[in-house]
Length: 264
Length: 285
Image 1 (tube, rainbow over the protein chains, first blue to last red):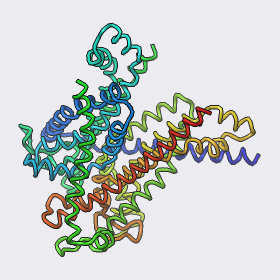
Image 2 (cartoon, rainbow over the protein chains, first blue to last red; image 1 turned 120 degrees about the horizontal axis):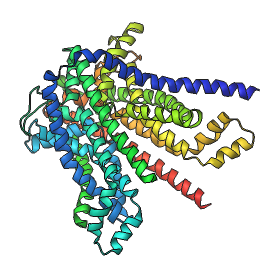
Image 3 (cartoon, rainbow over the protein chains, first blue to last red; image 1 turned 30 degrees about the horizontal axis):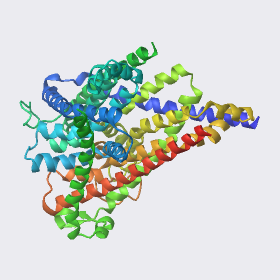
Image 4 (cartoon, rainbow over the protein chains, first blue to last red; image 1 turned 90 degrees about the horizontal axis):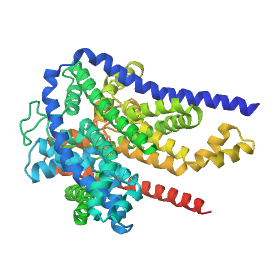
């Protein structure tokens, strides 16, 4: 009897704690929605949006090929050894390094040593280093789900190893790879510290990769930090949140499709 | 083509190696100005007065991280237990998706929310020297931010516990919760620990969200409602105008942070290795 009583107490406690978790999530989202919905000013947000797009596109153009290439090497070519263990440790470490350290490095190396200045390019190079581990890991997972029989079939038909990878393995792993790229996109859109120190805080429309500009996240940070306009901050936060939610939904749908096609 | 792929993989090592070396080399010259001991234990940070003591920031970072981890572990592990053992599968899936969402929200939004919701609440109920901007606010925001990591890792490792354990425990007359707390959590230990270590790394490294709610005064906090400045905030706030020795001091701050994170990451790989080895042995037996 005593155990039963204690169990129901534990159960109530556990359930209330998990409701707290969900409650906080709903609180944050609802709060931003309610306060932001009447303050969205897309004209004012246009320059930050363009800056964000600049950094996302250039950042992914650099990191996606390298990340996918590295994952292909790890999953298709490499044999377990010191080098592979080294790469895995490097990937884990890169994922663990705080974004402010990427910012510190990017600011001194790209911006000053390489003389790129506060620019979209400095920011993009910095974030491309940051999202590498995400892309490598998700691509590797995706490659792992491709059945070995596909590879064996292709090789048996006389295709070279490279042709097998390019024409058989990569297409069937594509949804998983896309998930990785979208995740990387989300990470770049939400990044503040690293971009703040490398792409600068200038509020203007960047016309080339060598110009400075502030992304949506940096814009929100500055509005909040300097307390210039909380209304604008709410609007920016909502736009940022919606972009992130859309990206999340995209990965969710890709994932669902993946599960369905693999269960067929 | 193999060489191209090999090169891509090698870039991973080059990037982390180069960045680590760059930060360490950037920070080392500073120690000819201030000794490592004076830097770490110095209680005054005053760049214009040539005083570089990082102790208040070190303490703030540690307090913030420890506090957030304690709350994050209690709430996160409990939530994961509910997801795995209490809720029906379908509802658990919805909860799980919601928690993934929580993981995707950018840190600056957490910081902003903390600034407009948590800071005024703290100010109203406890006051404090920072008018709500405080260590407590930092702990609350960080604990929310590391929740998804801890929940996800715990959930995965709880689900990986073999079903026989449950049948065995229940068959011996244990209640469901006796099984969860005395058997399942123990069996999932290494995965949960890995999640906690990941969370610690994230809390220690968070910058912008912390700046927005911390008050950023470089003083040693004596109460929960004192304003604080963390190591990460120190770099972000002063890097944009620092030069000379001051800049080197910030690099040295970055170096300390980098070494801390690498140490944590090393610990993490040890946990994972241990867990992996044990489950392999078990499957052999």
